[in-house]
Image 1: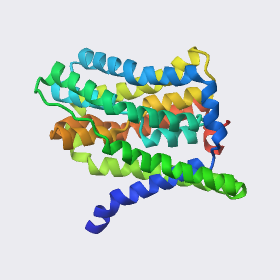
Image 2: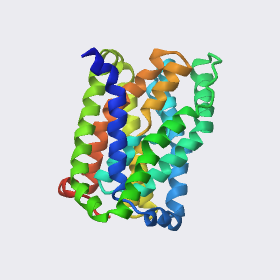
Image 3: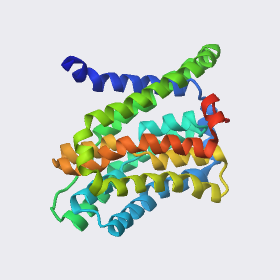
Image 4: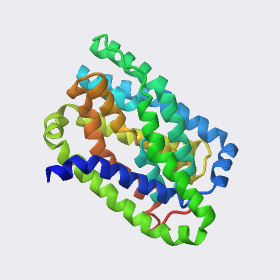
Length: 293
């Protein structure tokens, strides 16, 4: 059992890479070229991610009276780019996956600068500890490895064997759902004691931030005239943050266990809220069968 637990992170990374390969099987270069025709969508997503969400998070912290140590942790989460799961949820619920993948890559690169800036602002505003968060390029390389490389391989496979790509679409979606459920259960089991102990203090703020992020990311683009696939893509990109990166900064860079508790709670709540969000904006029947382009 202990050997399995030791190998679990590697197994999960492998599973996520396989999911990204499956996403690549559904994409072509033309999907990315079409991003040039949606400059408003790209700019809107980046503004929401880098500027609006941190401001909303700050407002929630003040409005709900979040304790300083949890406030810094929540701001770390707000400063983190979209996670790998954003691409997966968008794929399952009809979003423009090419938009998600491109935004994840761009946001991850931008976070090398934005995350330390926002984190240091939060530390100065709430904790006043004087700690500095250095730029973390290692996580950029990790995201490239887990997201972009398998997707590129999947796209290459589709270009060479379109029949194989078509046959694998449904099985890969089912596999993705199983992995999502497994990730949620593992997150709950791994962080159960910490989650139950801190939920009363930070749970409402985390869940509210998650729900507002998803709603803002979807409904603002819709009000701005974007079509549903792009709005869904932005909704998931804005609504699902890379909680692993926030946990990494909290533990490895700042060395404070309490700072990572908001991200730990978020890593559980986001699966529930993101799934409910998908069924809400797309509809149960379409979501299960497969989303429109």
